[in-house]
Length: 478
Image (tube, rainbow, N blue to C red; front, side, top):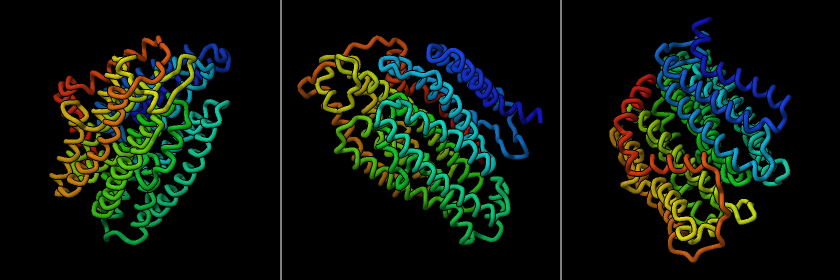
């Protein structure tokens, strides 16, 4: 039991911190919100710091329910970094509107605990508990600005569609349990490999993958994404677009490799369909969007499609390419949303139209340069670092004899490049729109600069570090 508890040390740190901050919020009220935020960031840092030690110890806890390996460690560190960054971004944004409450960092911590459980799930029930803990926090975060009708609508839409996805996932879990006789990933793999895949097992696989696909916002389970991203407060949208995506992709990778390994032919067809549909719809639907947050929602759908191409390979290199892709994706996406946080008029009100970026290169040249780097990187245009993860996922697909899938992926990335370049053209070549109000938020400025440097050609210097780490993490699943 002691060994099992030691394997869950990062989750224990975050749980204790969340409970302590809940008491601080109860006694200190909203005056303690800023202090609670920095304490929450400290707790996330402590959990990330404990992660390498837990990974070195390694092993399976609670009779197979919880897995602590290098794959989970890599995913969790990425989750904690994304969650901490979105907390830093929130302080300056909410304080202007007077909506920042002490519960916000607590909800982020509780969501991070759920995401950690998702990455370490070794059983369908642990998977479900982690996913629900993450989701319940997310529903409240989406509707955090109670006086804003858009925020309330976003929370309600997310809740209703999330409940539907949970029902689909539970139905799939019950089918897999009924036909294989277990909820443990290892036992499910044995059951699937025993006498071939029965119709009942196939339906179970389809429903489980559909439930997880909702969390990754892969087509055709993406319908909540544009509305929730647009309606939720911008720091919350930045959080939704980064940390939960990493957790859901890590969960999906673990489920298909460890639990559904013998059914590779079956799950690969589903993943390929989701990959193609996501890259095509994410590329085409974003073209006519006037709202920058909706455009970035379709961008996230598009990028998840590319990550799924790497997953479809089903090899060690394929999983490593997915982890590499998600690492760079988090930097590109959070960087883009940090720029969106700076989009306020002279009276301090949020502005979300793409047209308001017109001529930004003349009024705020450094901000325009950072946004241009994020857009070029999301489009995968060399020499920016966003090109390299796309190359890795396409290469993994080619090595797995899925050359046609890589070719379609390359073609759809050209479609996506159109709307990224449209934003750059708006900032650099259109007549200047009314100037944005001045913002003096040093932590945000530092984060934008760090993200821009990471996605710049300097990011290639991180390849010798990231390559062995992602390969080592992917090896844990095989």
